[in-house]
Figure (cartoon, rainbow, N blue to C red):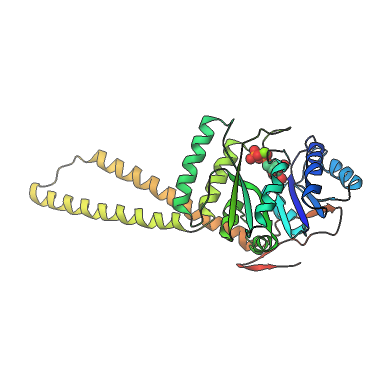
Length: 322
Ligand code: UDP
Ligand code: MG
């Protein structure tokens, strides 16, 4: 069995040596035939220099450097396209995904699963953040068709066919939590305790999290649009009922002027609702716009080996090389 470990790295210059040490301690135990594919996601620090040094010193290490920061999703994709193992693992560079779990995960994979996910608890995390995550997952699971679980991140091992399945999803807007679930196959879960980042800082800000959350909701299906249709219908029915009431009221007791408050509430409420749903429609149109450009997901600046094939989007169909 050949094992590939894909590690997306963005400004991780201080963490790479530790990561290398930890991986070198555990991987040879799992299989002698392994590779580590480091992806430099356009870091502005010395990450790429560290990668060159590691690749020169250790034949198990390969790297791909992207031409700029494309985001973790694209960096993972670049790594998956490059990895050639029968079993592929994805993990973060900051050691928040303990490499020691890999042996256990790969063993489980051997029992007939196609994906094994490591699920973290929320120890050491802010109250607000865990509460908002919990609420988010509850809401998400109502809206999307795939099942998403709290704490299941990108740390996972996959069989070759699961990787191929992921690579065949050529969409530009990649919400990988959802994609991992979408491809299906039998998935096993193991739990581990949340670990703090070893060095550097997290790339998540509140705004990024919020945007990521919205991405998740609209990147899977058109249920939010359905919601717009339903609410629009209900409001229209209410308006008709109210119109009927007003007409009968005028016929019965004549015209009287008051009604300013009702009018204002109606205008403001409906205005807000219309803007909200226009926004939702806009989200989908924006996505179509990005998909229609058919741009590659990433561009490679430098590799330690043969360049990976950029995955390009061919409207709705599987990806084609080149
Ligand atoms: N990462 C990346 N590109 C980015 C942002 C992050 O490749 O634009 C990598 C980062 O180097 C790390 C992993 O993705 O290996 C997870 O990032 P981070 O630790 O900031 O996220 P968190 O663990 O806080 O969710
Ligand atoms: Mg992290």
